[in-house]
Length: 435
Ligand code: FAD
Image (tube, rainbow, N blue to C red; front, side, top):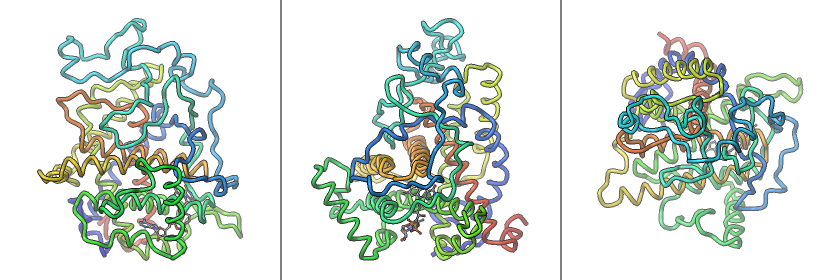
């Protein structure tokens, strides 16, 4: 168990709680500028309603509360022109990519490449076929293609908070997510993989039985595990804890009808479980490190909203954030992972596949708003893992718009959680940290 003291080190990261809280205070203004004040990072396109839960029939666990609803942008006029469907269908063509520095230098230009799309349309402004999967992806890609159906949502209009979604449906999803963490042979067949529908149904029933027997998913993690497996667990537990933090911080008191922080909710879900809180901080270190690593890549990234001034402003804000991230003291060292010559490659493949399964499970979430943020955050963590373990400046590497939007909004979610956790822990600790 880790004590949440300012000077205590967040295990598996290289920083203390206090350091990460300081960093959060420094980075937050830039993060807010990017996530609240740019079109590029406030609109997210995803397949919110089209995906069926591949693992079990979720019809009985749908949340009917008004708080579970998501307002989608049905009016094309509300979407920046470059992302509207008529524009998307116009620019069918070669898959867009963000040319690496080397490629641009070879072509004698560091500006976006001009394709056959018209002189004023940089090739990197083409909306990518986001449903295409790259071997290096840690998540099932969200749809931002001209072919796939998807919905645009404004993240600002649909904040993550208490929705009332709970009970068996929600527990089944969490249990299935933690089950992906069971790397050991006896658990190798997760509910996903290549199972038949009958096996999937059986897996769902097993999960229900585990749940009814009162087992705690954290039991799965009790055995001593290697760094990679611990990191996998910490990412999902940290995401879960961050979601719980938002629920408790933006809680609806059903008696008074008022929204606000709920200390009892915090104590029960987080305060009594310091390791969950520690996992939130761990995730902050991991995602921030991924953004730091992307800094050189982002220098060449073109932000397309169709408005040149806005794109310039977006780039400036993102670069400020990336610069701050890249100039932090060391907080997470990804080079320690997957190094075992005998098992490293296989372990990484397994890790990636299991994380993809976690992202697939988001279609089983029976509450639209929870599904929106669940999809965004699993995509954000998936992108962070891809950047940490697959990004190589010398190779052809690119991120889809949805990946970048998810990555930065995920950091913003964790950043919010750290501020909320500081609030819940009270002024004494907060003062000790800021001192
Ligand atoms: P749950 O949070 O459902 O947890 C189930 C069990 O998991 C616990 O009993 C405990 O044993 C274990 N556990 C809990 N936290 C951790 C952790 N951090 N690490 C390891 N183990 C843990 N509800 C909302 O109101 N708003 C949302 O935006 C929202 N988003 C969601 C997104 C997803 C992807 C999912 C699956 C659910 C979401 N929910 C949301 C529901 C919410 O997470 C809870 O399931 C619900 O509030 C019921 O909470 P609970 O106290 O029963 O425990």
